[in-house]
Image (cartoon, rainbow, N blue to C red; front, top):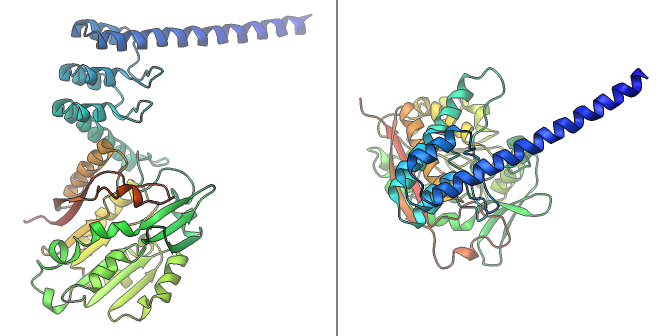
Length: 391
């Protein structure tokens, strides 16, 4: 008898729990949709504030993916945008068309609303980085990795190093390095990046050095297709020392096949930069005049760690640093946030950054990817050049 009663009570508890969940879900949906409608109908700010205070969820998104922050931008109410952000609105929520509220602000040419959301994103990511640095548990994940965000070989360094790469040319004749995933191939490096790399070596990184004519000491992390390293070898005064750090065995074999191990002044360190960053094998050069990094499948947290080693790696005030700035580069807001974030973090490590805009969005842009997944879809590439701050 007691067992049967226990069964009935258990069933009743489950039913009550389900009813409570359904009730809460319906209540939150009504509150969330009511808040969005009130914003779109341009109710007074006091009304909006009262709805938020009563529990209307700022994270709510309707069937079209519209959030309260999206709605505030659609009515171009900067005061309301600030209020929602201060109350905890999600800065990087995307609608069904993959647009953030900031993307909508850009389309409306509303710089004030855009800047409010962009700055909220910067503050949020700085906080995540701070929490990660102080955590004694597993690190807080960053929102983006340099080129991808999954746990496969495109999003895990260890998995990437053990994966298979293929060097070939696509249907448009450009050189490509491809990573095989489950159902498709991802571009590790694409030939179109020459549009960016050709701006880097002479005018941005090398010519300003007083000892340029004697040959500079150059460090590059991540070989890829060898685009940037080929440019470094082709400057008017080739480097006296050219160190390349590369972990992937297929890339290393590609380098052997193309004679990189036999080039004068070139030293190849086989492994990850983390394996050499404090070693005499690297620090024994006494500092580098030029440092460039372009890693694959590392998140921003790892790039941030690399920033911290720059004062020990750079030779002096004339030294220059740059990196492939592909952070969040499939969305204008994410790209802007991480451009500013990297500048702030470099400043913490004692570097100032000059930015140059390079147009990479042309009528032929759709041909650059072939059949591979895209990792940079914006029309403007922001090229960073860092140097040690003057004391």
